[in-house]
Image (tube, rainbow, N blue to C red; front, top):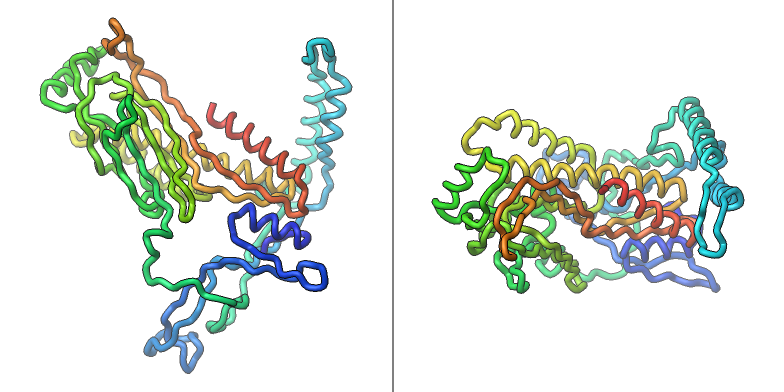
Length: 420
């Protein structure tokens, strides 16, 4: 199920994945584990054909464990010797080091380039000869399926106790996210809270709209100008989910500083809050990565973006819809690439990892020029992407702490490069 090499590694993986586990010890060794597991029951036509037909009357509740899958992995033969530790030692020995001030004065650039090029050539040859892809170069996995033709009628594990059963998940067991726009004094201006399952795959944005007709007139008059007199404009902050305004705040002068607070509330844990500075008049997209960002999810939102750009001439197309979707797609693309690269790194090191709810904040905000300390004029500013929450829990299949550290380091560098 987990692909671990021994019982201690199993415990490490379960702990890193935040699955409560208790080892069962017999004769001084771990023989099995007691774990918390969620399963479902379906009311089906079971008798007398054991679920092979759905044309009769539903008569039996059948337990199903969709989260329990056999996923055997096959390690690719180690034909390419990627001895990174020896590589690092060679770099150290060939470098010029100022021991007095403890810094490197020269690196063996040609040696590094030649080594990486040699490895790349070997990997390309290995991939071509064995029909490997970037995802399968270090290990292959497949879902081990069994087509019984009937419902087995029992679970693949022994159930010791039940802690509860629900037809609707209780509110206390739902992961939630609170999004708040705060004043400079950290007072809530507007806020919105929803379960993560309701926010998943939806565009989350914070935008500003004119507070009155006078502000709208100024924005319209200066739309094509290089500078905008923000001191004449009042705006309303709003929190949008899927293009719909869910919360609207009080008027604020354009260019004023505010704060964006995003709080993740997991069951049985305290709130985990991240706060960032924002500016009235900007557009901000929050992209969530609940566990994994798939290609289909990214493609779906890119298609939405293409449709928006095809209909730019429509009068009801708002700046939030255009820019918000663009910013949201940038965050999705970041997580899509990051997840792919982290998976390759994990496979190469023999590591499993679990991602908790992670977030990017992608922004397009005006650059403000102040007069006597107050916002006066604005020009277009840059697009920025920030990784504001990134929680990865690695666990080595062999129990190697060094492999876990190397994964964490590589994932951190990958994230830095992708967000820069």
